[in-house]
Image 1 (cartoon, rainbow over the protein chains, first blue to last red):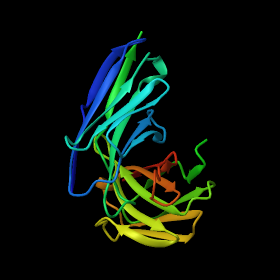
Image 2 (cartoon, rainbow over the protein chains, first blue to last red; image 1 turned 90 degrees about the horizontal axis):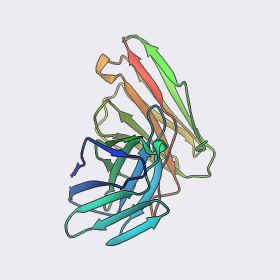
Image 3 (cartoon, each protein chain N blue to C red; image 1 turned 120 degrees about the vertical axis):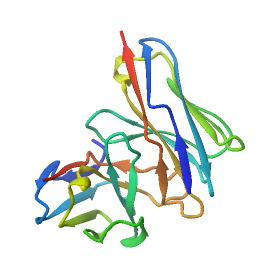
Image 4 (cartoon, chains in turn purple, blue; image 1 turned 180 degrees about the vertical axis):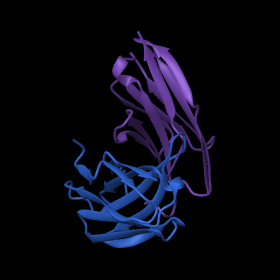
Length: 111
Length: 114
């Protein structure tokens, strides 16, 4: 099975940096996704890591350490529109259609 | 616009009713998914269809019955639901599961069972 943990809430100031951690325990791993979900809207894909290291995409970066069962999503130069829930999801192996999600981290950006 | 649409967006039904949720994807994907999202809980995978064949049934009660007539459409038939089934039901699609295979979500149907 999969056990995925992430903090429930985080608050940061506009223009700052926030790091959302995700730890997982898995019987089979085939990649980790981060999704953003604004209140009342669909989750949207942010990033995917399957190898160790940092993937950078504009203001957002995602890091993975498979040996530690650990990932983080880094949000830089925070904007008010970044206020949302951020979901960590682990893809199973060998059933790689199956994603297990964390409960999500609600990030509130304050002026 | 994510390319995945769901209808209805909101649904209120009694425990003895029968209703259906509809999902349509316009992305040319070949896999479709149903998830349940309850407040403060992780998304729960319910069903997965790949090339119109069910490849995952995540121990979902039989009062939920999925149907995938083609790779663009997915239904969730509901009957004799319980109040604890009230949740946001999200549909998603993907182009297989290999490589990245990220899933694209619809806006969801907010279901309330009275």
